[in-house]
Image 1 (cartoon, rainbow over the protein chains, first blue to last red):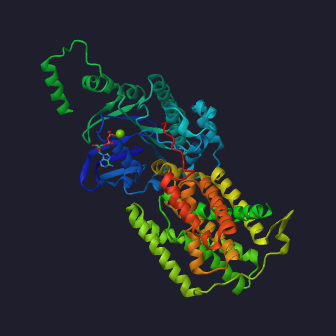
Image 2: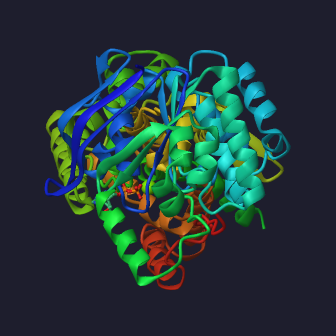
Image 3: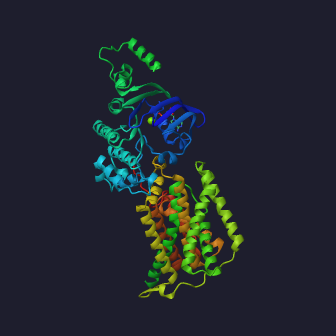
Length: 263
Length: 292
Ligand SMILES: Nc1ncnc2c1ncn2[C@@H]1O[C@H](COP(=O)(O)OP(=O)(O)O)[C@@H](O)[C@H]1O
Ligand SMILES: [Mg+2]
């Protein structure tokens, strides 16, 4: 396993417990999806791995995170990124006053003494639209362009493990499709291991090999993407396609509640 | 007319030096949101270090200049490591109190070492630096100020535009969390910004020291002129700092030339108040990009 999270608890501001014993493992070369609704703790899980909890006053209080055989749960983001783990933040977060190409160059921070020209070409091959916009300020790019920009920026670091936080958020369906195709290609062509956090479970489970479902700071379900796609609960709650014969009766609502609790 | 042009030339030269000094102040603010009240002392420290090396140490001017810049850079770096770093993440007011404390501490140390006397540099600038355009003469110091100002402006412009470290520094100023997520060494950027700030403060300290003579109180209060300069230019804009510097420089020399020399040092602060009243974010503050 490339990444192994063992039973971690995360607490914000010393009192607010958000993760309550989360365990998950990620095999090298795979796309693993982490699903769940708003506030389930998906972003917190990613930040625990990338070390970005610290500036938010969050802390892993229990459990271990082991990456490539090394415990990393006490390391700083500077150290973790240099081990090859790069998180692409939720909500895109470009450097607005830097040009597209300057944004990409920040991606070389972990290895800034080495040449980066080839990596730049690679990123432009995956995201041709960035080449066209390379000299314009990131602040003036569209949402889809920005998502490509922040993913390209992360690729510049040559990550071994890429953590993507809701890349589809707020984007048009066509753009989402394009971005997910590129994620799949990056995984296949670059061999990058990917943890994909999504609320758009349908898209995520199409490209993931394995998936976890989170609720209220806990993992409530896991399985291969194929199993999860077929699972009736996932279908109903996360894919938004209850089977046709289900009648929307009071009993169904109750069963929804019951299942929800069980989940 | 000649008098007017002469004042204008002097004003631009001095203003460029103010601008260079303000650039350092703005750099610290942009990188780490710290308002450095010890900026004037960094400026004075540079002038005294240079003075000690040339007048007392007998070093050649060029060597002393380079040595002073290096020493100032290291001083800024150390100040960040020792005093600012432990306060990262603490409330802004604590950090401000700290820089005010640093300012008193540095001033005390300098008074201890050099006393409160006024020193003047030995006359080392060659007469050949004096430029003459018709009736206007630019004295050697002002020519020197112009050359040094333009040179370092261009140097830092290139540094921020093209070098990796310069781009990392701008990324931290732009979005610290995103910079952190890509492995930018944010603390190193803070330290670098202090180093560069102390370095440019020293440059302006040396030039202003040559013009006005060097004295701890005098130079550190000249350092306070960064406030009108950056308020005029916008606290977060490096280009604004330079333009603000030139404007204040012009304003001062014109006031000194046409009104009275005693009003000269007050006028920047009057402008400061007026600008604060009508444009609180400065004349050249960054226009926030709303889209995204
Ligand atoms: N910096 C923070 N301080 C305090 N609470 C936080 C912080 N970040 C997130 N939380 C809380 O933790 C819970 C999980 O948040 P998050 O991990 O962002 O969920 P998700 O990404 O699944 O939407 C939420 O209830 C949220 O309010
Ligand atoms: Mg989230």
